[in-house]
Amino acid sequence: MTTLHFTEEQRDCLQELVNVAMGQASDKLARYLETMVHLQVPAIKLVDTQQLPEHFAKRYQQQSVSLISLGFFGDQGLRGETIMLYQLANVGVLAKLLGYSDDDSSEDEMLTDISSVLTTTFLNGLAEQLDNSFSYAAPRILSSRDEHFADKLAATAQQWQLALQVDIRYQLTDYSFHCDMILLIPGEAVLRLRQMLDQILADF
Amino acid sequence: MALTVLICDDSLLARNQLKKALPADFDASIVTATNGLEALAVLQSQEIGLVFLDLTMPELDGVGVLEAIKAQQLDCLVIVVSADIQPEMQKRVMELGALAFIQKPANADKLAAVLHKYGLI
Image 1: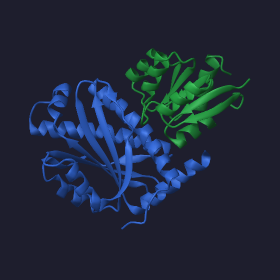
Image 2: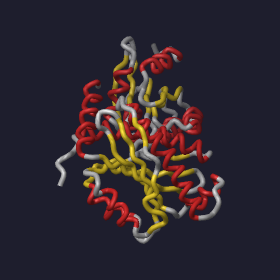
Image 3: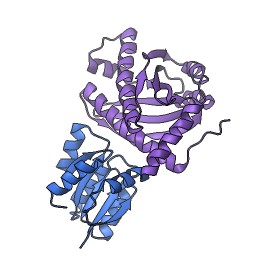
Image 4: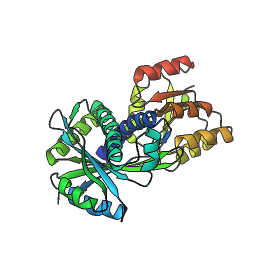
C-alpha cells in the first residue's frame, strides 16, 4: 500500500491544473471533429495501480474496449504514461465524421490519432502550468476491441506505483463519445509533482 | 463606494489566482461562491456589481447561471473566466449576456484591459 497522497489543497490545485489542460484538449478535439464538446468537471483521483484493472473491468463490463498508451518525459524527474480507454459503442459515428474507412485497422489508426491530439495537448497544458516541458514516445495500442482488456491494463499498470485517474466524459453535440484518461506516474514523480503544486500554492 | 464583486469558481486555487490578478487600484469588496447555485443565492440576496464566472462547475454550471441571470433579470455585469475556450462556447456566453470572456488561468494584463475597457477601473 502506498503512503503517497495529496492534501486537499494539493488536490484542488491539481484538479484546477487538469481542468485548464482539459479545456485546451477539448478545444483541440472540437476543432478536430468540427463540433462542439460539452465539457464536464474532470474528476481526478489518485489510486494504487493494482486497483485500476478491477475498477475499469467493472465500469466496462463485457464491453469491447481499446487502450492506447503514450509515454511522457519531463524535466526534474516528472515522467509517466497516459492510457486512454475508449468505449467503442459510438466509434463508427466518429470514423464516419473523420473520414476513416470502416475496418479494424482504420479504427486503431483513428483512436491513435485522437489519443495523440488529446494526450499531447492535455500534457502540454499541464506542463506549461507546472513550468515544465514534456517530450513524448510514440503512441502504442495496448488493446484493440478487447473484452479482456483488464489483463493488458494490469500488465502495464504494474510497472508504476501510482495512477492519477482522470475521468473525462465528452458529450458531443449530436452523439455521445466517452473515454477515460489515466495518468500513470512513478512514486518519485508524485513526490516531485507535490513539490511543484506546493510552489504554485505558495504563490497564492 | 467600492464595487461588490462575486468570484464564482469551484476551485480555491482559481479563486485565489483571480483575486491576485486583479489590479491594485481596483476598488472592490470580494465575495465568493463555489458553484452556480451558491452564486445565484448570493445574487438574489445582495447587490453585486460584477461577477467573475467559471463555466465548468458542479451543481449548476456557468451557462446555467447566465441563463438564470437573464431569466430573473438580475442586475449585474458578468465576466466569464473559464478553461472551456471553444469558440462556440465563447459565442454562447456572449449571447447570454456576458461582458467578456477571459481564458484561464486569468492573466493580470488581460484582466486589467477588460476592466478598463468597461470603465470598471
